Image 1 (cartoon, rainbow, N blue to C red):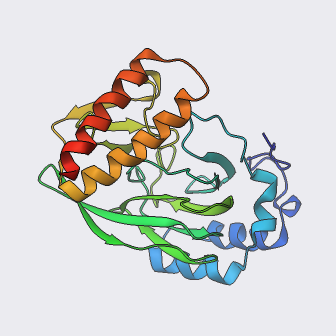
Image 2 (tube, helix red, strand yellow; image 1 turned 180 degrees about the horizontal axis):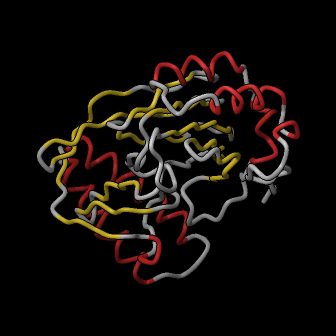
Length: 252
């Protein structure tokens, strides 16, 4: 794993960060009262490059992690993170905890879908795929998943903020697990098949439309197959068989 060259801490001088990241950090420190549109514009103006983010690249993340995830800077009312996407890496469907405003800039061609959650049922709202360099805004209502369907790895820059932060901005984020039919609350990565010790709580009864369920199951199935290529796990093997059966039924 490539280790971060700069500690993810406010204890070191911001001057040690790449110049364009410095610009973004200083702008974010001015006030906690932003709109998602403000942050989207701010990230575009910062003109950060993939090379600026390489000290936080984590392309050698464990196969059990659905993507690489590194904290770059914790500003109290905001967090800056870098995600690393190998070919086939996809996040689970998720929201962003307490986040009120933010933006994501992707340095590759990412698959990206936005969802809506209504009366306990998850629906695909729209595709909003990334082209390299594109910036999408993040608000409190955003439920999405993204990933790398291509053949080359890439990085993405994530900014999340909250005006009245009482803890980690993205803490207690929800993962929408359509195989288990549950909402899983976590403070860490929004990965497929999270271990129980990384889940704060669960709420059952989650449902989804056919399109959303089929996409979710195929991506979860792919991640489990990747894990099983590296280790023997009877529980995951059973889950894979059940997923494949459900995919077959949904595809009829």
